[in-house]
Length: 328
Image (cartoon, rainbow, N blue to C red; front, side, top):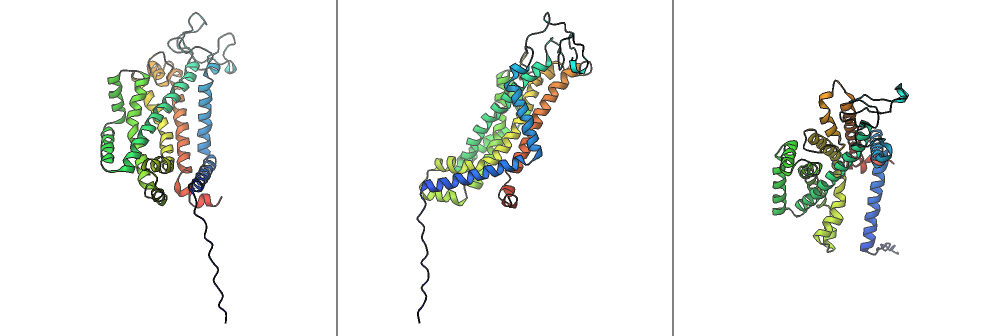
């Protein structure tokens, strides 16, 4: 009686580092493709991207869109009056009068041109401020979360001291020491924004560093810095991206607040907060002078908030790794 021999199991050759890296890149690319697909399926996120696209277009082509100089008064150039209301020919304004879509401010300057150029200032402030805060906060949070021990205690305790002060009050104190100006206002907002990004990064690093693929990298002899910057940080980026997107809106609002009280952008810089401060006493006699800059701030902040909410839903691990994506 013959006994059937069991099939010999097939032993696959071990994967080299290049193969492992290619598999990781494929998984990362697939994750980001699924995330973008989910993002474009959310109406609020799409609306935010459309609004933000219009703002970016206005900032890039401001010299073409804006019909007048933002700093030069129109006295002696056109027959205009101080704080003149909007004049739009399509809405019945006489054709013999020069067209000013948002009126004239108290210094005989075209409000529409200043609002358009203010888009440049606000986007520049938001992106540069948050970029500096994200880079610094990410490095501090990653070092604190990965190495732990005394490094974690020293870094996080210093950041706790910064968080102990009211946000805007600390910004006012920093600008008061450094001196009024847009650059100093951006630096103050960036400094007080660092703890938020450091805490988010630290929490992500603490969760990622305990995963199996990190132990595999250690077993292969990878250095701590290689593991931190090539294995852990790429996997800790999704929550940081969401916080940074929402942080841009906060930075724009805080800069406008500092400019409103005279510590941010200085005249004649076309910044929306400074425009509101200049004409704040004319809210009833010439409401268009505060309405249009305020509307620009609201739409800009709303666009980043809508995009940030969409990114948060698209990058939610319960949705990306759960049944919602598996059904696609």
